Length: 244
Image 1: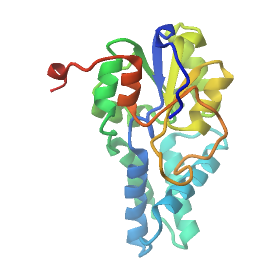
Image 2: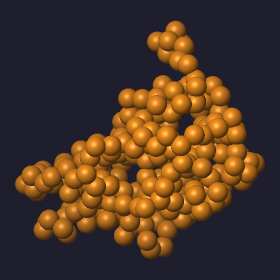
Image 3: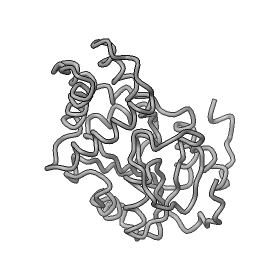
């Protein structure tokens, strides 16, 4: 874990990536892709290969003119068919895109967000459609002061539009905001360019490769394995009575 000292009193707000950071998107991706592969007798692929292929297909789909994230995921589903030699059905692709709404939170996300919300303003910056995030937000059980989606800014991270927009809505300078995310490529790199400090939630600690996100040489200000480790560093003591 990166042990660079950080003065958390300088921050008024925490911004979060959602999928991969708060929501277990790799489990969701694997479950959805394996349904498609299994329907075509191809469900013998390695998890890491599936995730890395997803990352490549997603990045390629997002590189063109803006389209809703549903369309991106449908293209990714079709791309898996092209890679493995079958035609992904329209309904298969649609169901894969819709599955985002049901991807589960990490076990530490709900409690961690509840505790952090007792001290900081919370916001979301996510590469997703408004309605897909709405369903995920219900699972997280926390009220975010601001939610900035790809649909709203018509672009995908690592383009910095999300970050400009959330700073504008929070009415805060970059030095008063801490960004918390799992992806060095999508989040830590563009946040640093705008002068935001960042916490890397390294959900893949001990695993090879970058999983479903492209590798990046971006360097975060702090590294933690999960949200509860961040809560501990911030110095918030859980009140077990309120978390039952």
